[in-house]
Image (tube, rainbow, N blue to C red; front, side):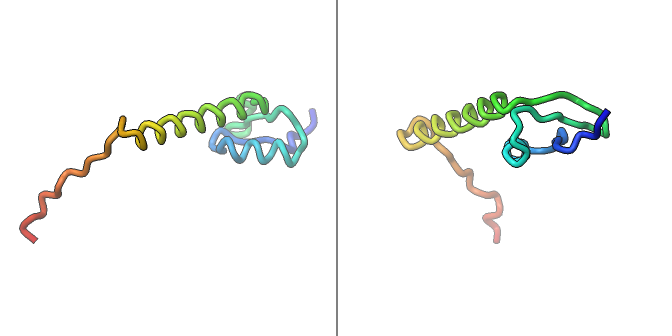
Length: 81
């Protein structure tokens, strides 16, 4: 068996995995954990995950700007200073 040259670990980010795929010009990337194959991710999996994350962030920002969400700050109890 040949050694896996392009691979990612379970600790790598989605951005890092996409970078490795682009550099290796591959659509699939083995995921290695402690020297053992843990799984394989496809570029479709990663792009869908990244898109979902962007859509969720966009929806939150739209809600925040329209006033649906509010951020409140509680006063600190250090009033003696």
